[in-house]
Structure formats: structure tokens, C-alpha cells
Length: 617
Image (tube, rainbow, N blue to C red):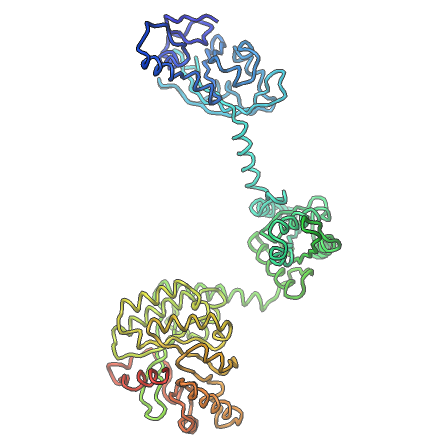
């Protein structure tokens, strides 16, 4: 190859350069520096330090220029090293270079340039592609990234192109790995959840089109948490990998396996009836159970529990398949670990599910549309019958204008995880009401979910700080069942509430049989005796003895007592005789959306607050 240092021609050229504007020619990036008169030492050092050809070679890139009419392909001097070819002659033309491409190459540089649908407006047309190069005499394939720009001749067709190639084997391997992990599980090598559901949808569509049936099973590794705790996560991973292999070994040809979640696998069965699924489940359960799994920590015994559903008979789409498979898996676990259940329709369950969906929509819409209302039920002093405070109760105004009581909403809201939202809204409404009515004392019920909810605590603290004087008039009620569920946690809750300045009442006391020792540990202020015992005082000796004992023991502990569901004067008289402090129920007045304060009923601020404060000391 000729080289003209004085003319500063590129070192790689084997033919006269084109007269067209040439980025490489003008930039002169491949030329060897011309011989010049000696420069000051610092100037020479700076010029030699910037060598584009050396820089490109060091990062594994080789520039090229392709003259299309003559098919001459000129390269930078480092191309032989980058592309692992013996000489530049092996890649001196587009045709020779194309011979080195792997046979399964989808698109070549020729395709990118000559088959381009774009037009050159004067600045060239960019292209970028990847392909595999197989140098002659080498057993190593090279993944090449080719980035360049082609320029049109006078006829508008591609006349020349130039660009840069680089070897991207490592990057391609990483991309392949990421692509693999996007569809397959790295631990087991089976399909991941995303790919599994794709295949499940395709299988379902095929079954529908062929008027056939398919099946899906969720296979759960039992007690994986115990394996993690006993042996460590590495051993648990070994167990999961071994379970995957055993499941695969027991599956029918044509069925599919994937890892659904941490301890669950999904199995797709083609042309499957409920009877076929039961036989398959028995094989899988036995295949995992019948021998221990050898791990680095020793043998580990593992079992699996399976729930399955056939489709489209019992599930019309993928979400239904997954939901019903999970439902049957839960039932199988509740019955016995290491068992199998197949989904069977249940009219009552379906009705309940539809009711849950309807109720969830109603609750969310009521929250969004501000249809959560407060009703207030008076709690009166036993002897004077003067109202001491009010219990705040939630009501929902339905879209048709009717009211839904809390008793018909709260259980569903708790089951669906919506009760926290209701608690937040009720708290906001009550504090706003109490701030507007300085004489109002009230209590509010808190669900078990909100007791440990940081957001609820944040809301309570923020509201009380923003509305001074409310905390000492607010009583927070928790149920006895909540209190005894975890005494230590409840004790912390009580302490935090009291630190904010509020008081604590235990609602429905007597239904959970809390020991008075635990009650003393909690440090609550008020006991509300479950109305189920109060309403039959005049008819049941057992209830009379029980309520009288509760009132007596509460007095000894310095706690105030409230009797719920008081319906008649004889019962009220008995409660007064035993020393019960407050009455609540039909005799005193039921909950109402009407606001009595400021109109007819005044809250006696002198009695209840002092009574509570004295008893809590």
C-alpha cells in the first residue's frame, strides 16, 4: 500500500481517494504524522500524545471506507488485529468481507446500504447492525457491531460508505444472558413466570380453537421457609433446583414447566381432563416425596402440595386460571401438606366472590366520592344519665342514597384490605368535627390493620398537632381480640396513644377472655363490656354473675366501665348498683347522623374527663 506523507493521505488507502467530501480525508484520522521541523519538546509530546489510530486500536475499533462501484474496502491499519485476519487483503473488498460472515447472518452491511429505503439529503444516511464474523482459519466467531453512514452519488444511489466496526462478544454474551433471564429462571433453567403465562395463554387459545381442554397446576414446595431457617438459602436453592428436575422427569411429553414464584412451579398440561390432572399430580407428588434431596448440608426431605384447574371449562382466561389454581392450592394446604386438589365450582363461593368485588367497588367509590359519614351514639353516666361522650361510628351513603351500617361494611373491608383507608377517613372526619366543636368528647374504633400501620400513626400525630385540645377529648377503642392477639405489641400501641394525650378503651370486653393480669399490663383506661352479656342481664344468671365480676375487678384496677347494649331500666338499675360507670345502648339512644351538640344536648365536660383522669391514676 502506498503512503504519501507530504500529501497527508490516509495510511490505509490502496486507491486514489474519492473527490467527494470525505469525513476521514478531512479529519485525517488515520494518517501518520508528517515529518516536520523540530518543535519545542513540550509541543512534540503533546502532538504525539493524540494519535486517533492508536486510540481506536486500544479500544478494539477499526475504521473502514467502502467504495461501492469498485467494491474496494479500505481499512485502518489496526483492522487485522481487531478482526483477527491474517492480512488486509482478506478483507480488501466488500465481496471478500462478506465471505467471512456466518451463514446464518440475517443482515449484512450490503443489505443495510444497498437495500436502504432512505435517501441521502447531502449528509449521508446512518446505519447500524450486528452480525457474526467467522475469520478464515479461526475457530472463534466474532460478534461485530458495525456503525456507519453511506453517501449517495450523482444518481442518488449509494456510492460509498464509511464507518467503524468493533468486536462485541462480551456485550453480546451479556445481552444474550439478559434475554435468557427475561424468559427463563436462572436457578432452575425452566420458564420464568412471564414466559410461563405467555405459553399458558397460547395453550388456552389452542384448546379453545380445537374445542379441547388443558390444565394448569400450581406446585408449591412445602415448608421452604423452614429449610431456609434450618440450612440456609443456598441449601434451599439446591432443593428448589432438585425439585424442578424431579418434576421435569415425571411430566408427560409436550407438557410445560415453569417457576411461578419463590416456592411455586407452574405445570401446563395439554389435552388434559380432571382425571388426567389427578394422575399427573400423583406422579409429581410421589416423584418429589419418595427420596430425600442430597444437598451440600446433607439430605433434605421435601414434599410438594398441588392445586389445579382445567380450562376453558372452569376458567375462561389466564387470570382466572391462575386465581383458581391458587385457590385450590390454598385449600389443599389447609387440608394436608403433600396433597392435591382440583378446582370444582362452588355456587356459594362464587356468590361470595362477586359480593366481594361489588363491595370493594362500593367502598372505594364511597371514599373517592366523600360518601363516608359519621354517626354518633351517646354514652351516658349511669346515675345522672348525662351524656359523657359519644362513640363515633362509620356509615356509608350508597349511591342510591340509602345508608350502609359499619357492621355490613367493616368485615368485608377487613377481608379485602380496605379497612385502613376507612380508618384514615373516619379519623380525619372525627378530628375535624372535634376541632369545630370544642365541647365534643368522642371515641373512635381502630381496626387491627391500622394498629401497626405507620401511615395511620403519622395521620393521627399530624392531626392532633394541627388541632390542639383534641387529644385530651379523644378515646381510641381497640377490640379485646386485638388486645390479646399480641399483648406486647398492643402495649406499645397503648403507650404511643397515651403519649399523644389520648385515652384507650377496650371494646367488646368479655368476648376474648383476656386475663386481668394482661389487662393491667396494657395500661388501658376504659373497659366496654360486650353487649352480648349485658342484653340478657334480667334473664340469665350466668350473665349477671359475669358482668358483676367484670365491673368489680375493673373498679379494683382503677378502670372505668361502659356497659353496651343496655335496653331497659331494670338492667340499668342493676348496673348502677354494681358500680358500672357508663351506659350505652337503646335505653340511652342509638347512633344518629344528627348532630345534637349546639342544639339540644350538651356534653358535660366536667364529668367524663375528670372521671377518666381520676380512674387512670
